[in-house]
Image 1: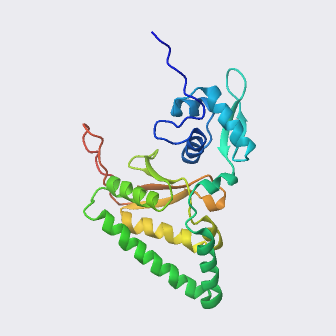
Image 2: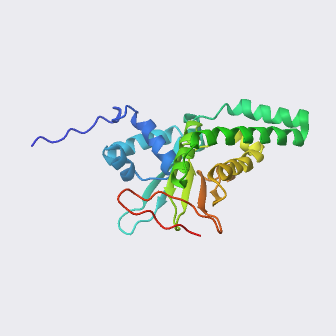
Image 3: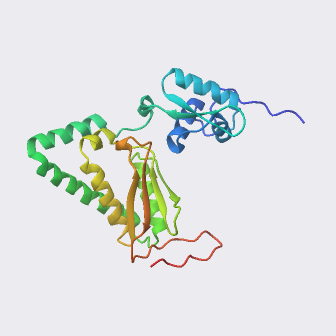
Length: 243
């Protein structure tokens, strides 16, 4: 049987993305990974992936930390540097930051608070329109993650560790500069999530990009006395409600 030909290191992967950009995308979405993990995802040899990683390192886009393994040498866990942020949308970061500063200077903290309240109201209305008719928490979370991804947050939903819990993860913050200057943006974000997902759940921020984390992560769990309605996997009965 003829041997499968190794992909050329510089050729696009199946979806047409160049290998260097695909590596950056994976590290952004999944956090630190070693060359073998990246190679398995991209269907390349580990050696080819290492060449790309060293090229990215030379451009100061990635760095690594060594992690001890039970057998053999320590593994290099590669991660993005802040220089790689330019590959991801920043939501007109400079303009947004300038507007926040101007509103605060002209109208004061109270005026900025009113502006954030109007923005929050409009966000809630827009998100609710997209979630209309979605009774289950699972569907509302999926819709919320889809909306946030469209807005540049690279969001996804995962099962949480506890019964009926979920994790809403945002791997990017397109308004990070403005959020750093105006912490009210992040506070209002939690208000939006809580309102559109309903009083039956409690939302806790576990990780925060503004505070130096790689991502923002929120635990969505049944509120005390609440009932979080979820969808059971296909072929399995719906789990009993908590409450």
